[in-house]
Length: 326
Image (tube, rainbow, N blue to C red; front, side, top):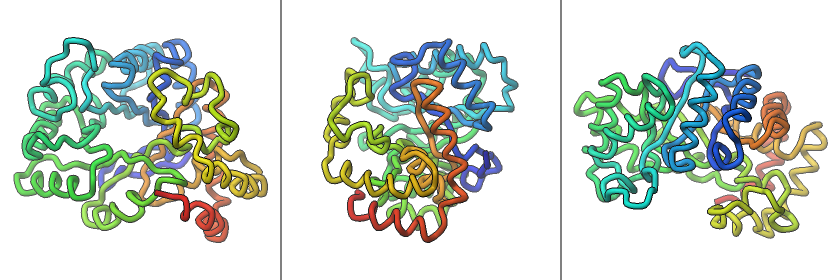
């Protein structure tokens, strides 16, 4: 496993990391999480991603209990969470969901710390932009969490380049902690935001990227070419919004061309897709997901493919991917 600095910080993250979206609590209990976290750490992974909204907070609880059982030294791992949607519980106050106001944020961090059983969280993100809260209010609150020692770095997830730049400029002007990283979706069929929209911003601010969904929620595994199989992510309750993308005919047809390249390199389609995302030098880490040990082993083996992605191979991939990418 290789490591990259997170943006212009001194913090180093493993090229591949492990996230908990969809899986933790829904498919993975504490015992299974402990096994997968241990395997990931043994493979060199040091970053583990989470969010308050995942399984209405239960994902944080599962990860926290699993890490506590593993008794890792706190310096050995980096952990994150994200704020915006709240816990989505019946009767929740209007000020604790779909917002980035100060009242919500300053209480949300305390809830995540309690569920994870931590004294501080390494990386905290604004999970989506909030057009109804002044960006100045959000920046002050996120910066204050760091000043209070509850977090070490803050960033954004799925914000536009203009929104990130506005937050960065305000923080810079007022000598606050600046947003250091962005967590965007990035895979072979979703490229333009990372490669085009953020390009100048990365050059100017040194923004680090912790990208998610390298397998396009499973599309790039090839399992959806004949529809949505039982037990897959697309079949889970609440995941119906993914189905249209997973069953896209043109993108599924393109998988056969990617498989030719994967076969030549001696890897799986999934490993090729993950390695391709990690090849981008602007990407600090690629967040992978897994519901069992076999999937996790297969995903992490993608690090062995990186050296084979020569400019010629990347050009072949680009010819297939670019015309179908958003």
